[in-house]
Length: 310
Image (tube, helix red, strand yellow):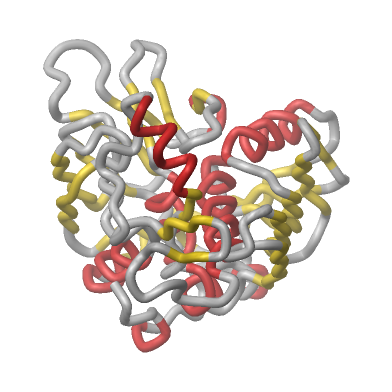
């Protein structure tokens, strides 16, 4: 049985916006790449030294606010999680991302604009097999009442639960089988969210300078301050699942396993990947055949299922 082949873009895709934390304008170009390239960023504003940053788990500088990658030369790019989720959710395995600043543009705070740009370009098959990371035994990490776990499964699933004191969010939980375009239908339009008190603190510390009520859902107790409110009643937990997909996409290949997050964030999910690869016998690399491909997020995605909100 022939293996599933890797994909890249058919044409370049350009995104322009501002960084969530810096507030600075940024231009980002996604370019087709050959098989085996993987996902890699290139800082076009860096003229000397190594400006290429592979999107891999061991290059993550763990932070609670976003996912930041840094290469051995100290060159970094942050807030990569929404773009990484979009690439994983559309089944793109190889792409060079040229970016002229240190942060991926926040756009509307979700992955939907990235998904729509990728789908407009279309994907092109390459002559190389897709290799996935199969989870063989449970691995779990915990910190300060939060937990993240990967369990064996013949498909990729995400289960998440959150619990916030703010009545506008409260307790939420959701579980999804990520195959057949579920990411585009269920998660890609869910925006980042935060409490007004946290926004005030971040501003005092020079962070979230590009954040607005249009690119994040801001809550204050029982009130939703962003115009139009939530896109989904459980948009908050959906966005946490989106983040988890983006952070897990740094594994170096699609994951066959079930991720369970309990109040987990970016740093803990990366810690989980580090524990997974450090645990003897916990994973193996497998070539994806057509039957296994039916269980991956990018399979079965159609344009009409992408939410029209972005």
